[in-house]
Amino acid sequence: MMRFRSMCRRRYTIPNPYPNHFALLLHTQPCDSNPTISSVIQELVQAGHFLKALELYAHHFNHGFRPDNQTFPYILKASTQLGDPTSGFIIHNHAIKLGYDSNLFVGNSLLLFYGRFGWLEPMHYLFENMPQRNVVTWTAVISAFNQNHQPDLAVEFFNDMLVSGCRPNSFTMATLLPSFSCRQGSSQIHSFLIKSGFESDIFVSTAMIDVYAKCGFMFSARRVFDEIPERNLISWNSMMRGHAQNGDAKKSMQLFVEMRISGGLEPDSFSVVTALRCCASLVSLGQGMEIHGYVYRSGLERILIVGNGLVDMYGKCGALELAERVFYQMQKKDVSSWTALIICYGLNGQGAKAISLFEKMKKTRAVSPNSVTLIAVLSACSHSCLIEEGFGYFRDMSVDFGIEPTMIHYLCMVDMLGRAGFFQEALKFISEMPFQANAQIWEALLGPATIQGDRKVAEMAAKRLVELEPENPDLHVQLANIYAKAGQWEDVAKIRGRMNAMRLQKITGKSLVKVVK
Image 1 (tube, rainbow, N blue to C red):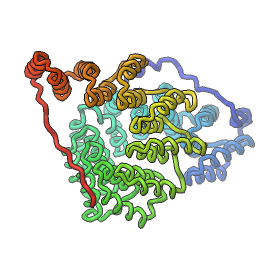
Image 2: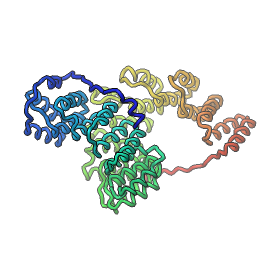
Image 3: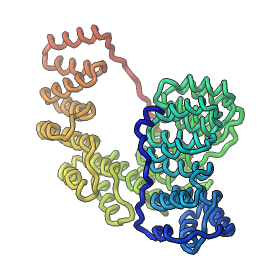
Image 4: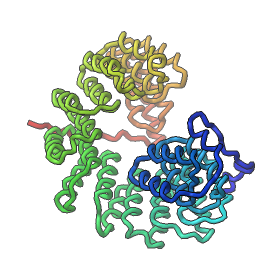
């Protein structure tokens, strides 16, 4: 915490941007609170009518209404849920003017508000100056640091919380656990959970499963899962997702079946989406169609992410007609829907259809393409050797859509040139990139150059790859094979000697594709 405190020595002045009608709220005289208005605001927020709650607050504040410590947390929640920082700043000013900023419940709500928008300095200033703190206070700050990609600070504040004598609850632990996803403290925090009596809490156990899964420790994740006394849908989904993310789609599908048979639970939209991704990965059209049947019977086809998942599954299993049918029957489509079908066209060598769909997407003006959409379009152009069209989209993407090309967009272009055999143009393109080429760029050039027999380009790409990934035995073997085909046996011997010195050994692998007859 000391490292963060050094950034926050000065008193923080609350921003005061008032471009809208909320500015009028600051210029009225206070009067007695109106319990009826407060109750209506609370009911609106609880029902999810956040904009109506803010409008009611604005109108009545301008006519003399003054909120109390019961109203402020609700109206701040409305601002947070709407993503409206301006109204939140003004409400904070109201709390200060009316003397409620030192109230514990109001203070906790302000911490959540500032954390939601990533303003960590004002959040920390509020935290340091709160006369009272409880478990909600600490949890709000820990959550904010995690949400804003500051896991080290989240752990620091958790340690300070323990030192202060405040005991964490299950929400604190579930909030903290993502901090350990990419750290080496997963086993230590698990031991702490057991010693503190949290191991039987399903909320915490499910979060612990996610931690182990993100670290790739699926054996440990399974152990936590097996120790949950009563598993719910969320815990099953976490295990399914963990296996899928770690490349074990088959095990994920086994859990999907097990959840229904032994668990007695019906899959929700998240279960279905994970299962559909696994079917796509396994190219298992039969299982995918069975899941589609369940989706239809359960009414889940109306859920957007499920529809997108079906399009993706059918397309990656080669069933383009079914992918198109699902897509055009969807009542609502977002950018992911359009992108999914564009990807499917590209993977199945239908570059012209991918471009046609992209042009149709632009004309609808209902959704705007994002970076992933452009990757899908460029990839489709690459797979169909539509070089002129691909370069046109690449050249215009920043102007037409405000999307700056990333390394992946450049990768698509190198892949496109390599597939077409334009190796010198590809090398020139790589040399003019605004950043240094990574291993994927050179891999995209190595494959086509090797297949099409351009030994010099293949050798150059292989050398660059060995420099970037010296401990990858496959790259050394590929370079040795290039030399062997050219009869450069001395170079082959040098590579073999280097591999022996580094104790590198090529590992052979197998692949399995399920064929549906």
